[in-house]
Length: 134
Image 1 (cartoon, one colour):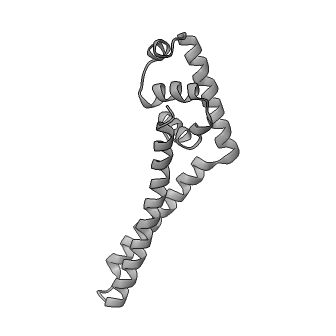
Image 2 (spheres, one colour):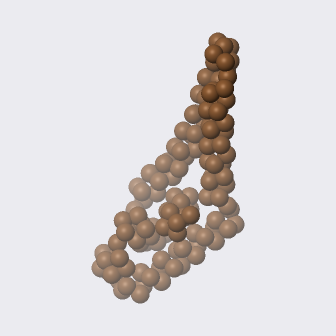
Image 3 (cartoon, rainbow, N blue to C red):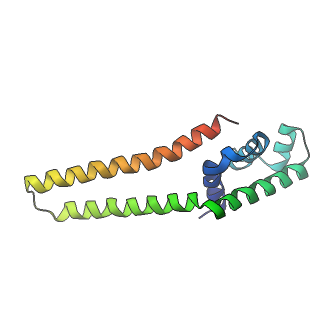
């Protein structure tokens, strides 16, 4: 997984545990793609101070993930659900056009789509709640 994407996920899950300054600097760097110099000017500090703060913040986020494993668990759950989704599609392709089978498959698909939306909404909710803190 790309380092920027991984950092974004870590921020989505653990960003609320960071200080406001850490959130702001991290967001400017990873989410808004500003350079260290641009961030330093924005927050009124030096480029080196921004670099050091980012390093400490990245270390905190990866440390929390190492202890809690929420991002890895989320990715595993999402991957498992996508596997089930593909299996349901494959099953739908081979089932006869029997009314009971079609209805049962339809219920499974609806439940699966609800599960996927819950997983995705949890992630979006994390992003929205953290975005409001910046």
